[in-house]
Image (cartoon, rainbow, N blue to C red):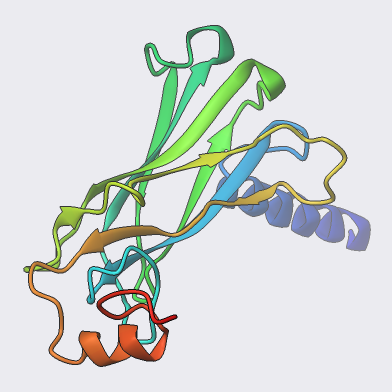
Length: 167
């Protein structure tokens, strides 16, 4: 009786774990993580006044390497949390046959919906290549604030990125 109870508990725990990862196994899934921000200075990079965007939509798109500029063969979407972070699960690892990238879709923040053309997508390598983890990090993606914050001039000047070169 005790053995049956223990076996049943392990079966329930296993079933719950399987549900939580959507049927992924160690060999067939990857997780892509990254963040989305509002570039409040329109600097093109993260500054000390950059803010994370909650609720931004991103999509992981994968194409066959022979048609990298062509049709998206599969994709997965998610939204960012309060810290601007997202995590996308991609099932069925196809290895080196795919070229994948995370792309910005939309921002829910009024005044910060313009996609930064230099930060609108981030390539992601899914090939195992002996890495110890199935989690892949994408570069940060950004939206531009319509009007820069008033203190951005000083911030960029402090970074020696003010109005021009200072020789």
